[in-house]
Image (cartoon, rainbow, N blue to C red; front, top):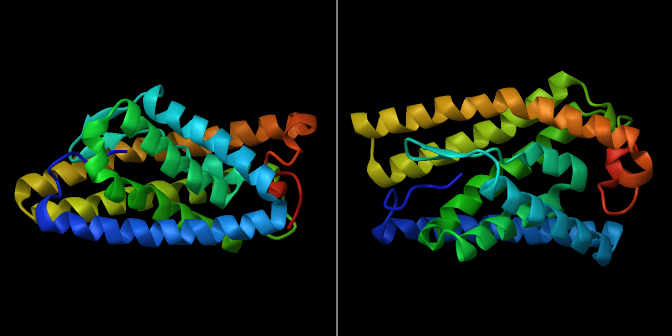
Length: 225
């Protein structure tokens, strides 16, 4: 997902720097907590994995411009369930930055907006997971309804932030409202696909426990809290 260049420009873009710093600060706090709980090397390994996956998602999976942004299969809830919140957040931030540096330098001025749009919904998903997943439930045992709730929360958050940036930058004219609406409608197709992807990945992780039960993956993937 990339906010199109020119949607927010001039002095208004300063807000994106502030929101990115706030999201980055929360990411660093979560990373410090994860390192204390798991050790530095496992978190580094997970971050390398998520960075590579995010870069792949953005570059290889189908993506197309609609309205004010692009529709991507980000699979944020999948990253969270497999690797944990901090590695998922770091992977999103680093994968997006790597893509910008190597292939899309025209997106770098929008990096603050894009990273805010990706990270804030991830942390909202993390809070939702604590509410809807019982402490005695491993992630590999999630039901479809739970996977759908997590995916909807993440993708809905992405759409909400894209809408915020578009209206903040371009106002509430009819053309801008139509562009935001078309983007939001197109993005909801991801909500139909991502829960199935989550369950497929979790089923694979469950059947391959000897490979996914190590410290490279989130402990909660196979163990209750």
